[in-house]
Amino acid sequence: MFFLFLLVCASLNAQPGSFISLKQHTEILENGKKIANEVDLFFDNNKQIITKYYHSSSEFIMISNSLGEIKTYYPGTNEVGYKQISELSSKRNLIYYFSNNLTDHLGLADEGFNLISNTYENQFYVTLWKAPSILKGIETVKMVFEKGLPVYSEYLTNKKKILKKIYYTNYKDFTQFRLPLKIIEISYMPSGDSIINRTLFSDVKVSSSADDKYFNFKIPDNAKPVGSNKGQ
Image 1 (cartoon, one colour):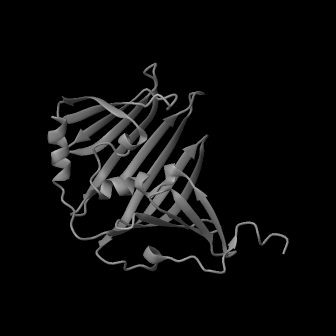
Image 2 (cartoon, rainbow, N blue to C red):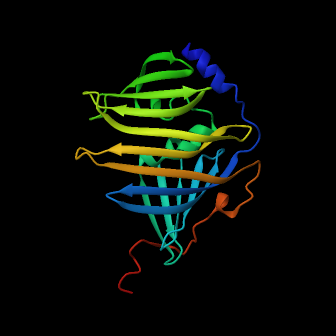
Image 3 (cartoon, helix red, strand yellow):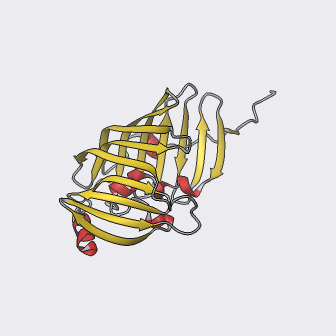
C-alpha cells in the first residue's frame, strides 16, 4: 500500500523548469506579539542552491547549499558571514521537498525517522513515523495525506502529548509539482502557551532559465567579514 502511494507521488513527473522563485511572508504570534518578515526566495534545483533576500530593517541576502554551507551578505555594510548548519541545508527546505515531489515524508526520513505504520482513515492516508533515539522529546510524528498530498502533521511526545501541529493548505498546481501556499504551524510550550507561525507563498514562478540576478548572485570580492568594519 505504501509503495503504491509513493508511485502516485512519483507520477507527478518533473517538467523542464529548474529555477523556482517566490515571495514568502511569515508571521509569528507569541505572547500576544506578532513578528512579520518578507523574503524573496530563489531556488536553483540543478545546483541545489537557495538564495533568500530578506526585506528587514537591515536587508541581507542568505545563500545556502546542500551541505548546509551558508553565506550571509549585508549590502548596507558590505559585510559577509560564513557558517555551516546542516539543518539549514537547501535539501532540508520545504521548497526542495515539494518541488522534487518528495512529499511522502517531507524530511522526516532524512532526520532519521522510521516509518512504522500506514493506514487509511476514510479518504485520508495516514503514516506514523518513529523518532530516532538521539532525538529527545519527540516520540512519533503522524502525517495525514489527502489525494496524495500532505495536509497535516502532528508531533507527539512519549506521553502522547502533542508538541506541534502543522497544516498545509491552499495547494496550487505548477505542472511539475504542487505547493501549499499557506502553512500554519502551532507549537505548544510546557507553560501551556503556544507559538503560531503562519507562512504564505505568492508570486511563484518556475522557469527553465535563471531569469533573475539572484539565481546567480555573487557576493562582492571586496566584502569584509562581519564585524571587521567596527572601530574603523
